[in-house]
Image (cartoon, rainbow, N blue to C red; front, side, top):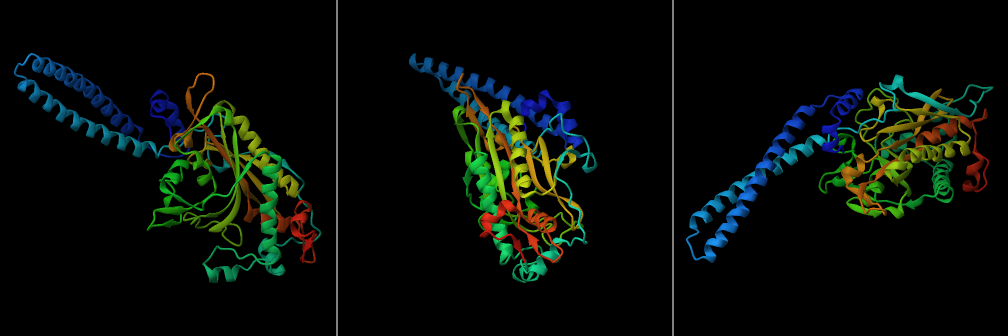
Length: 422
């Protein structure tokens, strides 16, 4: 959430940022409500001063055993007016919060302006494999090896769910363990296994609510939500807390299932593993000091990149333009793995710096050691990485002409030493 004082002092910047995201929000209404609130607060301050003065005068009259009834009646009237004005301030504050919570983060100056066509490829890694046969897509490969059963998953639950079996299930588990080991043993993250259900305050804190409620799976009787990403529970670990500067930075890595209704996915490629309602993902979350957050973003991207390098999957790093940024992000890089069977670059990770946007919504702060000043923390997160499309990339990049799939070398120790799925 943006600070109201920041919006007032940087109104042109905030308006431009909203426009660059191709959004329309009426900041005039926000400022009008705030002007009214400020006016009420000023009058309220004057009335409280009058009440205090009247209270002193009443005390003096009573001490002198004089009639104070007129002053008492006056103070009662002032107190009644104060109560009414306090209600007005509360109402104005609620209206302000309703608007503020819908204003997206301000994009960093280095973010390209525009839509998907304006995204910038920052770098690529690896060589695209040259096949001496026509490569299959992951659906045909998986069905040929009998490692994913799409039809029975549909029977059990519905469309766009996954049923891994045999070596497919083992490959999924191997990827999870490999990624967690890499991030915890080499990159310095502490492993977290969070709840997969969260409350409304948690979803609001990270910015999924109120904007994306229609895309969430909700338990209406309990007002709980199935998480769309581990970012939500992990970021909210420190909600309404003040950390000591000495503990920062804090790095967490979490495995979770992720649940997304994908209400806006009509017309997109939803076949196979491309866009599913439930999938597994490793999430990296950082809590850092503001002055370090953009260096931390680059290292976060590097942590996600190392997963793909060790898997030996060609990928590219893309800096997202303003219209592709998430609601809460100030800057974001996507990692896209190449899938030769469908000849597409697939997003397998998004790494974002939210600056203090989420921290303000979730009230996550830290106390500086030097002067005891309390500031909002900067939060970052990145997929480390998402599994369905990583499985797509492995199946399509490592497929063999006989229909088998070589197992990436780094995963073999997690798959009982097997070298291929056949």
